[in-house]
Picture 1 (cartoon, rainbow, N blue to C red):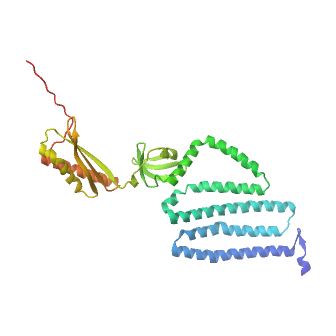
Picture 2 (cartoon, helix red, strand yellow):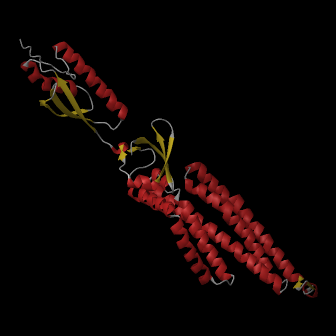
Length: 349
C-alpha cells in the first residue's frame, strides 16, 4: 500500500494527489456549513430585526468570503503539488493578483460598512446620502494603492512609477483646474453644509429645491419645473439664500393714503392696521408708524413677522391682511393714494 502511495505521476505522488483531493473536500464541507448554517442564521436575523447590518453581512459572505475560500483551496492544492518551476511561477503570480483583488474588494466593503454605520448612528440618513459621491473617490484611491502594492510584489520599480504618476498628476491638475475646483467645492458643501438635499434655495435670481449634490455639479429643481445643473464652485462663490432654515419671515408693509384724509382718521390708521395684523395666527406684530410725507401720499410703514418658513402659509396670511385692510379702508372711507398731479393755472387778465 505504501509503495502504491509513493508512485509518481507528473512529479507528484499518489499520496500528494489524495491530500489535494482531501483539501478540496474539506473546502466544500466548509462552504456547505457556511451556506446552510451561517447564512441561514443571518437571514433569520434579517427577518426578525430588519437591520441593514445583516443584509450587508449576507452580501459580503456571498460575494467575498465564499469565492475567497474556493480560490484559497485551489491555491493550497496548487502550492502543495508541483508542476515545474515555470508553472509554479505562473501560479504564484496569478494567486497574488487574485489575492490583491480580494483584499481591495474587502477593504472597500469594510470602509463602506464602517462609514454607513457611523453616519446612520451619528449623523442620520440625510448625511448618509450626502457621502454617497465620496465612495467613488474612496474606491479609486484604494484601487490605486492596491495596484501599486501588486506591482511592487511582482518586481516592478514602484518608485519610478509613483514619480511618473506624480508628474502626470501635476499635468492633469493644471489641465483640469475647473474640475478640481468643483471637487473642492463639493467638500466645502459636504463639511460646511450651506444646504442639503430637499432644501429650497435662491441664488443669482434662480430658485428651486436641491435634488442631488454630486462631486462636480448640484442638481436643482427650479420653481418653473426645469432641472438646473449648477457647478459646485458657482454655488460656493454665490450668495445662497436657504429658505428651509428660515424660522420666520419679516414683512414690511407700506401704505399710502391721500392728503385729503381727515386728521382723526389719519391718527387711527396705525392702530387700525395693527388690529388687522394681530388677529391672524402665526403673526407677531413689531411696529407701525406714520412714516412720512410722499409726493402724492401720506406714507405708513408696518413691520411684522410670519412665524412659519412655508411660503404658501406666508402668502395666505399676506393675502388675508391685504383683503382686510382694503375692506376696512372702504368702510372708513379712507382712500388709497396713487400717483397724481395737481396743476395750478394762473389766469392773468
